[in-house]
Amino acid sequence: MSARGPHPDRRPGPRRLLTRTSWPEARFLADVLRTETVGGGLLLLGALAALVWANSPWSASYTALGGYVPWPGGAALHLDLSLATWAADGLLAIFFFVVGLELKREFVAGELRDPRRAVLPVVAAVGGMVAPALIYVAVNLAAGGAGLRGWAIPTATDIAFALAVLAVIGSHLPQGLRAFLLTLAVVDDLLAITIIAVFYTADFSPVPLLAALLPIAAFAALVQRRRTWWWALIPLAVTAWTLVHASGVHATVAGVLLGFTVPVLGDPRGTRGRPGQRAHPGLAEHLEHRWRPVSAGFAVPVFAFFAAGVSLRGADLGTVLTDPIVLGVVAGLVLGKTIGIFGSTYLLARFTRARLDDDITWPDLLGVALLAGVGFTVSLLIGELAFGTGSTADEHVKTAVLAGSLLSATLAAVVLGRRNRAYRAIAERDRIDADGDGIPDVYQHRPVER
Image (cartoon, rainbow, N blue to C red):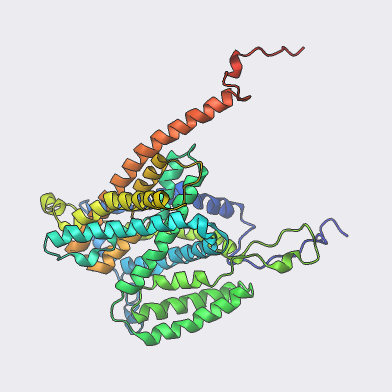
């Protein structure tokens, strides 16, 4: 066989969606965008750009850009949306599609597959949503209850931002800590999606929602047979998104449903008759690998740019800082997340046989609980759904989410930074005392090689 011919034991895998493997620069850029620190950095950059522009002398142009309607003729399909709404409803569907792929992978082949290993992060996620909601409700009830519709704003954790912070400060932290945070955030996303679908659906129309099942079923039929034809899958996904949006259910739910249809496990035919050969990775892993750069590098930063532009020029800071909505969101993110996650995990470990991984300590978990208070992307989205885009309450929500997320990230950096230094000292000690006898090797007599 020619040296250029295919290997006899190597069969071509499934065709990949939007593949450009001949472009080394594009592949390098995609790999960079998959890095947690880069995705979180772009998210932060988009938010900072919005804050600077919205508080500059040219703030009117920022408002006009967000309110521009590129397709006024789309009213019949409820698609006469502004750029800011397209970012929230359209681009975030890509983010939630990746979340759906990740959720399914966790349930089928990840940490959530084993109930004994999943119970702690699942309970922590539930506690981390219940406690912030209760704190928000208590603060707003004490003030008269006008802002109760925003009860779910402090319940969400921004997985990209939180993992980016952990990656920056956690060079020597236990690997199990990242796995715990990732599993917790995945369950958190699932609960947040459920809250959006159930509690923040207005003007519900069942006919478009039922019609959306047809393109979703066709999408599922293709991916289950590993037919990743972009010219078929993308139109089906867009059609499903359009119908879900027309039904009144938030259109990002379409992204999650499409992600759930993608198979996780590899094709068993990839190893048939060839002992010792590995199966092809599951299609969910392939699509997540392909679409994560689009989500982290474009969809989420653009949403952050349009969602985080709160103007404080001429604002009465005293009124803002004493607003029950602001107090409830900040207290929910900073205190509620910490109390809910740490408290529920401690109680479960105290009164059941469940326990943390051996490598994780309770101070480590405290740092992760604080870090879960970074509730940027989904919190801003729920705030817009609760109070409407551009309203005074929505502006206050943006201020509260930014302040609460920044405070949570700062406190988590302090706690986890100290833990990271402690783990680094242990690693350095183990490196110096390689033989484990308690005496640094540099002080022991070593025979001189001749």
